[in-house]
Length: 267
Image (cartoon, rainbow, N blue to C red; front, side, top):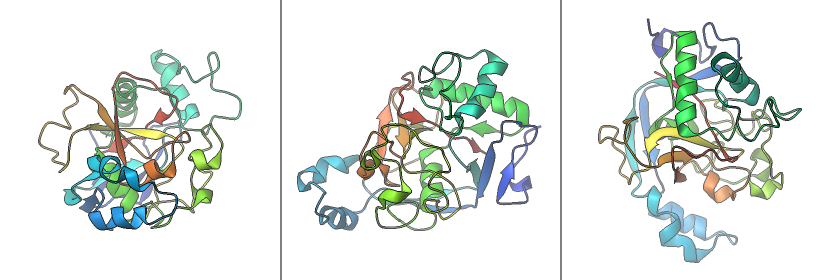
């Protein structure tokens, strides 16, 4: 029997029968503002380090800004980590991510987000986790991802309006590698307490990379649909401009890049 998100009493909870340490956060029913408004573009381009020449092209996929209703769901407290992914590999015989050294992740990187997992592999992980827990584990839609990141307003980053290099692992941090998922928590947490939604690694969503306005019923959430899938959150190899809550990119579902990981959703 599949359990409902509404049966979970607390905001942050452990998954039943899961020994990998995954926790999830309940996100209540509500509306999310998707995308970037013209006013926000003007304000961003007034910053001295933002190239004005990028105005029309850079924000094209984030417009028009619009509101979407998102039913209650749950989302992973953090991205799936290397140590959590190892349990999946050992249980199913799935291939080791090519970012690992040999048959295991690099020493000290157990709490880093797993990367080099394709969208198809992330789907298989979710199916495996569903079988263990009895929950409907899946990838989040991009509307769910943005609601988890933004809360009830149209903030630019999970923590608020202003970029802060001490709350995020983007190229400005000069790490050139992933970092532990809790490194910047709680300072970088979203209004719902979700950790690490900006920077570190891009995260797969279930959604096709399709134009706005977003419509969950137009085929973009069909797992069998062909085309690139939306990734969210930016990564250690990209500017903080791509780590904004509204920023979205597309990637072929069969690629496995060292800059892309994933987190689960439930519901």
